[in-house]
Image 1 (cartoon, one colour):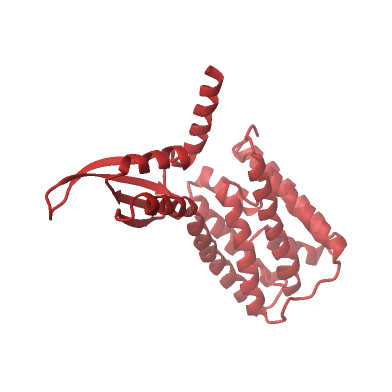
Image 2: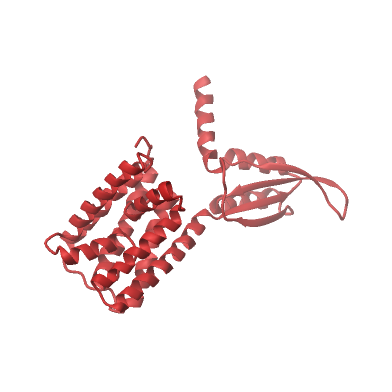
Length: 297
């Protein structure tokens, strides 16, 4: 619970949970399909306990799951999971007050399902991108990971399919099939959005002005770079190759700079799906170093 949340992460957390809650209240509930999630469980429970509002049941189930999580897992959730578990019923309650009666967006269950998967996957991808989750079944997945040694992703999928299967207790066979298919497709779409967030550019540059390019990368982009001594097969001359990994916006800035100072530079670019290590902390290190230098002055 000592996890520090930055202002940017607060914004992303609130936006991500808003999209998740929005898709649940305005699409999943009126369409009555149970795509594997804690909200699907809430839909089933609300059928048997109509006296309680959707937001109230959501709050009760999230509190129960958080309590179970703290008992069996400890404090490894982090503050983000707790906040997300509170935001979900809070958003739902606001929606209930503003628009108490909601109809299905199009009336076509497959089009509505596609819209739901799109919106909820964007919200979940935003959450996972800041190492957060929407709570709910993710807590069950965490418990399965700790005690049964099942990958969290597989655990979440298993819990989701169980939830979707429970729809047969309330709805017909068509809803069951749509719920199971929606749960499966939702996982695929979520992975697609997560891959989009994680994509980076590996840039290799051969230029006679590599020192200036290196300085731009380090001082302007706050990124690291690696220098290699290479020899061309054609001219057999030695040159310095500069290699760096950048986000898309940083790559655009670097390309503009290189084109200005050395239009003849030879550049190759490849897509990197994942970067492991201190790459994501580089800017934080740079900021710390600058802060320490200013204090020493």
